Length: 157
Image (cartoon, rainbow, N blue to C red; front, top):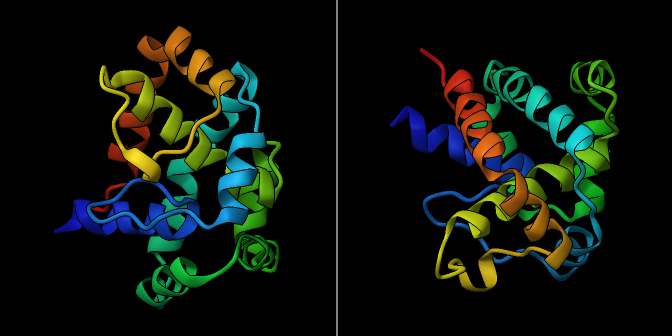
């Protein structure tokens, strides 16, 4: 059950796909569609992801944080990350801001998910701009293994 818990953490923090993903709010959907992925940005997000997940999972109230994040607006989630000195230290280390991370990780995940799916699956749960889809398709052979490795590295033992 550790793997679903990790995915739930990622969902709560970044709206990553999980066993039962929620429909992105209109606000988050718009932010994801406006987000522009680049190779340097993807590198930063993929470097910060396992550290951030380990950080959140180590908190005694991790489950509560995950549950609360699922109901928070994008502004509330961003403010929560900004108010957390440990989370901000991780993001600063990787040259990222709170909103950049909170929107960027799901934008990257969804672009990879859509790029690897011949049927462009996911329905309304997978939100990706044409530019981000093109980026993910062009770099899928590199991005997908790195995302998988980041997820494996984030799994508590």
